[in-house]
Length: 107
Image (cartoon, rainbow, N blue to C red):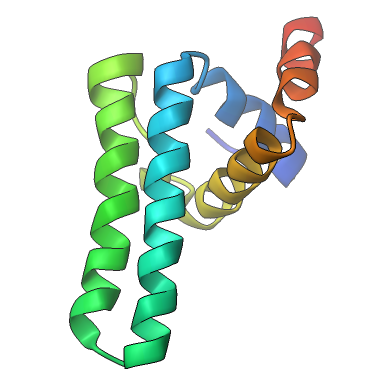
């Protein structure tokens, strides 16, 4: 699929993350990856860079393949997918995700 803006992609992203289990997998994977990224920056150990990539992708892919039963957008839109994962985490922490999901239902 082609998207003209991140806003268009964001609606697609939300459609692909309808199940709460998928969103939780993304949340914990992204949060875990960010924590390991901090350790990687503090230690400059390359193993932590690898682990910091494996954690979020494996958690997210689990959510897509086993819970949502769809294909991750990472394969076709890697940069926007990372941005959307971070936005998803932020909205989950600030309780703003419900409003975004309501927008999706009305579109």
